[in-house]
Amino acid sequence: MTIKQPVVHHFQARFKLKCFFSSVMYLGLYVFLPKYLEAQFYVQPNAANIATAIAILLPTGCGILVGCFLYRYWDLKPKHTTMITMTASMIFFVGFLLLISFRCETRDMAGDRFPNGLVNIESKCNARCGCVDTVFNPVCDVSTMKNYFSACRAGCEPEPPTQHPANTSHPTPVNCLCASSTTLARIPAGFCKILCNKFWPFVFLLFLILFVCSIPTVGSVMLIYRTVPSDLMLMAHLFMALCVGIFALFPSPMVFGGMMDASCLLWSAQGCSGHGACLIHDNDDLAFRVSGTISGVKILGLLIEIFIFWKARKLEFEEVEPAIMWSPDAVRLAFTETVGR
Image (tube, rainbow, N blue to C red; front, side, top):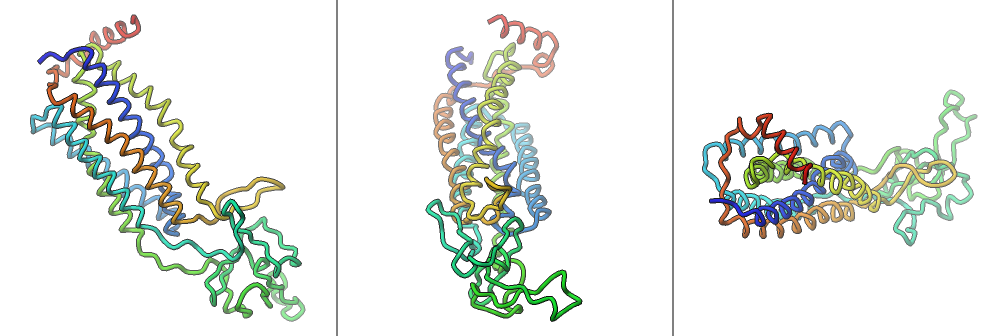
């Protein structure tokens, strides 16, 4: 069957738009997943990096490999390819909605809330302490399971160094006015412990989602190459890569970074103005923002894939020999004709 040129142009345009939505999600997820795991599940950076490799790199490679065997031994047509892509997108959408439920309890910071949602670490009980908030040294009130920015913000007074001459460089906080507990044993350094066993279930579910969604990758590349004239295959791919790079890969880290910052409850101080890194995230808000946004963008891509399936139901792959497809003459002809237009 000969593919009509206008149909191919509309088909390619919508396929590039679908790739745009997919790239916006994937790159932002790849870049910020370690930070998300650290903030959401309170894991160390090394564990977050290992989990990222397990949840993203491994399933993506395995899914593409399975897709290669699938298209190598089965005679799949464009309508089959788009059907597989639609099914994977539906699984992706439902899977990320389920990932919203995999979240840990937000750390309870002592203090009131500003109108913008940030935590106010100043209170009447520590107003006269003269606290310097340049260094974040949290302490935990075991009685109430509330975290304080520092021992000073808990209203603790340093123990007089004369009572323990050997420990004058690190005075012990006592008489903590803001905390319910007043003894050092009940106000240990560090955050209050939160039991959360959802880290590895989250990684496992993300692994399955990305594995399934990586299987149609080979078919998507075939739709790009084999639904256009052989002399324009290379330029079709280059044009798609250019559009995705400019309009998707460039803004996606900023979008995901903005979502991470929007869920912040407490910022570190930096100089006289502004703020540094985020110290505490609202985990519920973070999960809804990240997973919900990814699912919302994916549903837009799914609608485009449904339209592509409707257009591709009568299309056939154009048989092209690989040696001809990538021969120097074909590449030179594709470049010459595209630039000439």
